[in-house]
Length: 248
Image (cartoon, rainbow, N blue to C red; front, side, top):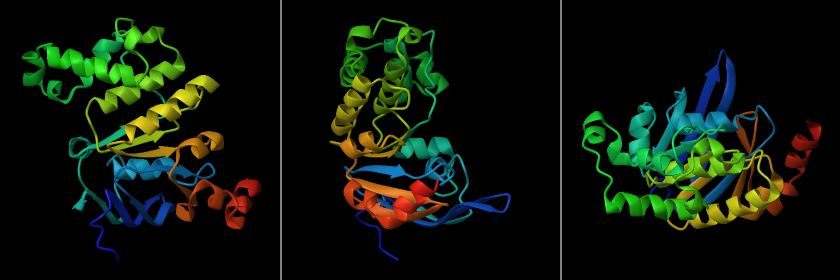
């Protein structure tokens, strides 16, 4: 067992079963500060379940998950968010009838509780922060537009922005470029490279070209376990990985 002190996130011996089926099995995963990690693997490999376990949506049956050396298994989802872990799901969850500005403003952490919301003031500081994030996610020209008018890719960016404005130290994205155009994918790669300047990102993705363009390290999951780990090249040339992908 490692002492974990240097890792932002450490999963050790993590497992979860659904109706006797081990969706995740004795998983060890270590994420560094400032790292962009891609998790790939065939359907049913347990990729999304791993994110569910980290963010507390699914309870761990066995093992330990530590974030900044703090055990987070058994904590509630909201607590885990407050500790600094942000999660984006496959389908964007944005407020379609609000503007881009309002979506971002609503996501600012201090508007969270009822009292905070009642005394909410749109200060210069708030406006500045919203503009800053909007610029990062390529939406500064669309702040006053209703979110429903955005393209699919822009909605994905908006949702990433809604997480970024909360300033998490770890951002988890589930298939962020699915359904995006080629140019949107390229911009998303640029966005992720910008994001990891002061935080870590875990991306689950099927698009191998995209993974190759962004990931520091790639973890291949198969049947709930780590099959291989390393840079994209070593993973792609791994015979076990080839077998799993070609076998499906």
